[in-house]
Image (cartoon, rainbow, N blue to C red; front, top):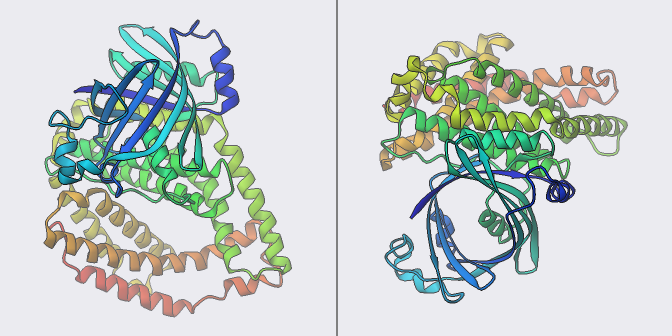
Amino acid sequence: MSQEVELKLVLDVAAADVFAESDLFGAPASMRQMQAVYFDTPDLALSQGGVSLRIRQSGDTRTQTIKVADAKAAGLFARSEWEIEVAGMTPVVDDRTPISALLCNEAGTIAPIFTVAVERLTWMIASGEASIELVLDRGHVAAGDRQSPICELELELKQGEPAALFVLARTLAAQFPVRLGVVTKSERGYDLLRPVSRAFKAERIALSRDASAANAFEAVAGSCIRQYRLNETILLDQANAEALHQARVSLRRLRSAFSIFNPLLDGDEVPHFQSELRWLGSVLGDARDLDVLLAKAKPGGSLFERLSQARDAAYAAVDTVLGSDRVRALMLDLTEWLACGTWRTAPSTRDARDASARQFAVETLHALRRRIRKRGRSLATLADEERHEVRKTAKRLRYGAEFLGSVFSSKKRSRRYGKFVGSLETLQDELGALNDMATAPVVLDRVGLRDDPGAKGLLAHRKKSKIIDAAAEAYDDLLDRKTFWG
């Protein structure tokens, strides 16, 4: 078994061709045509267990590789790996690997599920005391009659510190439009076995009971970055309202993570990242606001057409921003800081970092619940701005629960978690409806449509008083719920 540390970057075909022909690192040390077959059970038990199994052929050599993902990472992959040479294309499954224990009696049902074919160019890069293998893979993954292109750079650390990977990544980013890669080849293959995804919601964050607060933050922030990149990839291809919404959600979640885990964080980077995330979120928010209004407008009318034109312009702005060096650099900067930043070693926050995630969760969730109790008193009589503050606090409490809820894993606490988060969602929905009511006139003003004859219909929702009453009822229900962390 071995440990590998990789950073993955993706680029388009044209840029990959230019890179392959450049002399940035001299001639490649090797060029190989590689074919790989991935295996799983009919019910995809290996994938569900976080395990990938492949046999790769390069020349006359066949190598079986089993990888176990420690967690969904954002760009930086650290995984356990078992690798042996095999005689044929039938997997060898024995007690030297985790597969027998994972599958038990199902091991005999393992069969091919998809294939990967790539041309691989390899360079060995010396960077200070570090040694890095740089690989360019171009090809495709195929499952049945479906295919997905592969065009990616993998930077694998052979010797030295992970920071060296980012030094090399920045050298590449200065000359080629690379983006942070968050999808493995096996994930690409499994995606072909499912319906095409229109958007990616946040994945469940699974923390071990002995995780530290620092472990928790790393997992949470990495999950947010991954969710953003998955949805950004869709948006770069098409103007997809749901992908845009989920990309914006991922940025909000990441900003909330910075706030929730603030006691662990030190240095000047956090305010910078918060500012950049707020800027990018606002660009996506302009398009999202128009998506919401357009969904309420009657098709065919002049207002619908004018809103559609405004929405198209907003999505064009999104496309321009997502294509910018600023956004590409932001995701790489975040990943580098998460992996190598001063927050990991600052003496002033050592105790907070080393505290158990469970104790951190108890204290943090209790404080957020206390804050929402204080801010939401007499919810029905609060001003709109004050109710908006309650909404933001409720959202942060919900994110905190989702980030940290897995450290409370008993059946009793899981039931309480479901009910608690359900009540939070109801409160958020009602307060969100009030926010939409307040936002709609502002959005119409921004695009010059407030005086359109059809605009009044967009502003006529449920009566505001009824929404306020429903929000107050949801607030009371939330406070009546037993906490899952107490």
